[in-house]
Image 1 (cartoon, rainbow, N blue to C red):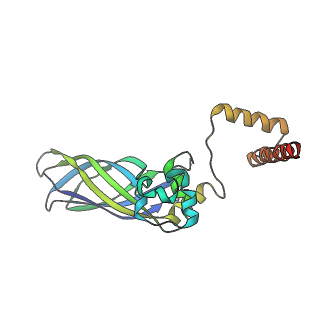
Image 2: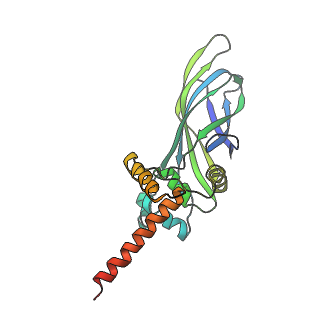
Image 3: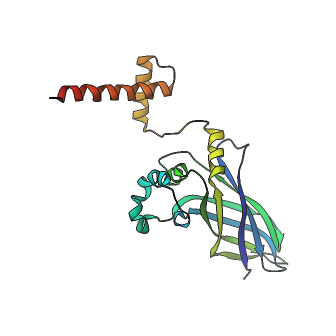
Length: 220
C-alpha cells in the first residue's frame, strides 16, 4: 500500500472570494517513486481548544461554549470547524496543493463563536484525512487513504479577524427565524427607520425605557 503523509505549510485568507474563505497550503508526500494519478480526499478540520491558553477576557467570551474555567478540564473538547473535499492531481513523490475552506460568520455556529472570542495568538487546528488514492506505474490501482492520516495547523487569529473584517467591516452577523425577521421588517416599516442598526437600537431603547418604568412602578 502506498504510504501517504500530509503537512500543512501555511494558511491565508482569499482576498478575492465572494465570502469568507480560508486557503490551507498542503504538502502531500507519497512513498518514494510511486506514481499517484489522483487523490480524492475528504478533510475534516477540527479546533483543538485545549492546546492553547486564554486570558480572562477570552475565557469570558468562551463561557457559553465551555462553561466556567474551573470546568474546562472536562469541557474543553474539540470543536468541529469544517468538512471539505479536495481532488489532488497527478504527482510522483511529493506535491503541494490548496485546500479551500469556505467560512461563516453565523454566531449560532460553535466554531464562529470560538474564533470571535479570541483576541490574539493562534487557533490550534487538526486536519483529519481520508479518501481514495489512484496509483500505479501502469494502469490504475485503487487504494484507501488510511483514516489515521492527519496534520496539525496553527491558524493566526489575526488572519481570521482580517478575513471577517473584509467581508463584514465593523459588523456582526445574526441569523433569525423567518417569522422574527418578518416582525422586524414590519416594525422598521411602521417606524420608517432608515437602517437595521436604527431598528435594533430603537428596540433596545424601548426595552430600557420599559425597564425604567417597571422599576418606578415597583419602587416603595
